[in-house]
Length: 249
Ligand SMILES: NC(=O)c1ccc[n+]([C@@H]2O[C@H](COP(=O)([O-])OP(=O)(O)OC[C@H]3O[C@@H](n4cnc5c(N)ncnc54)[C@H](OP(=O)(O)O)[C@@H]3O)[C@@H](O)[C@H]2O)c1
Image (cartoon, rainbow, N blue to C red; front, side):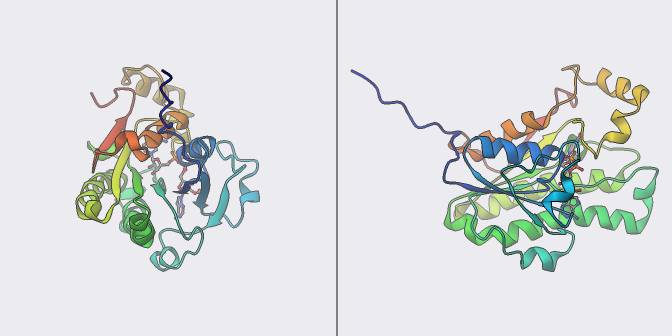
């Protein structure tokens, strides 16, 4: 007797995904990961049009629907029209500041606005549609949210907040049909980490601390998100999955 094949849990055909911060780097890899699995994918970024990312390494907007939304502006997020209905919301926006800038109050506030406050604004904007479609939210925090990062108080605090927000929203919205989880990446080569990665000495030091012996890739972050958004993770609520090559062990 032939056993019929079970449906592919990683087939996202017919699903609509919004990746906030999907214009570049990790978010762009996640967006293309969902697109390859059949989803219709929207991305938000800071520039006025998709064409302005054309020559940017780490930005492939082919097949994605781009909108400019400054997520630090809560009113802009609340009134965002595109997309209107979604099944998966990936919150991958993020910024960092170097040279002790994060010890200045204005910079601290700006980073917390983008890395933490905007997660709540975006999640609230899409709560209704995600509830109706029994969807899921995936936050992208950081391994830096789990330990002190001497030069980056705003980044570390905002990412710790993102991990806790993930758990709290999961608890609060589970009965509304929304699963909330997160991914905490280790070091990945993107425009956010250029300062570290372009410096040979710093890169060597960092690699020594990673048991896997190499950087992570946007595709590896995408794979973790695909799993968390899929039926394979149907009983996983409020968790943040470390995808860091063992760096925090
Ligand atoms: N790379 C790593 O090693 C690493 C490690 C741990 C965690 N992370 C986290 O992963 C996420 C993605 O970072 P990445 O490394 O891929 O850096 P990235 O290439 O600089 O991507 C950051 C994304 O956030 C968007 N963004 C920033 N400010 C925004 C704003 N005000 N409104 C809307 N979008 C905004 C950017 O838009 P534009 O493209 O228009 O600038 C871009 O799409 C971040 O949350 C970061 O903290 C990264």
